[in-house]
Amino acid sequence: MTNELTRQFFPIEAVRSREAGTPLGELYEFWHGLQRVKEGALPRDFEFLPATKVGRAMDFMIAMDVSADDPAAYRTLSVGERAGIYPSCVPGAAIGAPKAADEGDLLIDLLWCKANREPFYCEAEYLIGDRVRHIVTLLLPVTDEAGNIERIYAAFRLVGAPARTRVE
Image 1 (spheres, rainbow, N blue to C red):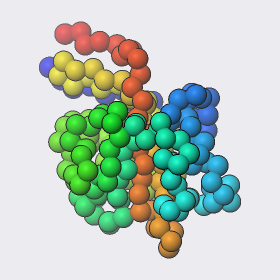
Image 2 (tube, rainbow, N blue to C red):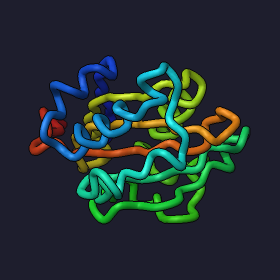
Image 3 (cartoon, rainbow, N blue to C red):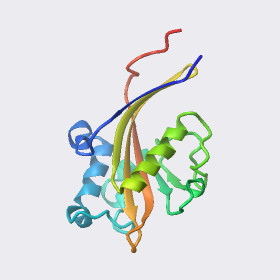
């Protein structure tokens, strides 16, 4: 049995229409509405306090420290109650050493987000063994005072039913 992955990438602006009324949509609107984003810069970590504005999105989020140059040193800071997309993502856990096949994609997406200094949005369907998972991922970077990307907030939404099932 082979593992399969199908991913579709969307421009970040698609979040507005595709995620309207969802916790991911609310989280994006809060991030996008911060003054620094309006001025063309990434928000600072101390400005991005989603719990104060979009509390229900916190359940679907993982906050990650990506301040290190070495991805092996990236760490999970907090995990929302319903963000158990990646079972090994627990507070303090290394992100740079994926434990499951689909966790490697999260690391690649984090690296892209950090290198490009842009948010990231995609939909993916994983077939791993006999497990099928269909998710939407939103990554939102924030900076420290010096403008270095310090954290990336990942939010996930499970899509109701997989678009396909395994056929052997």
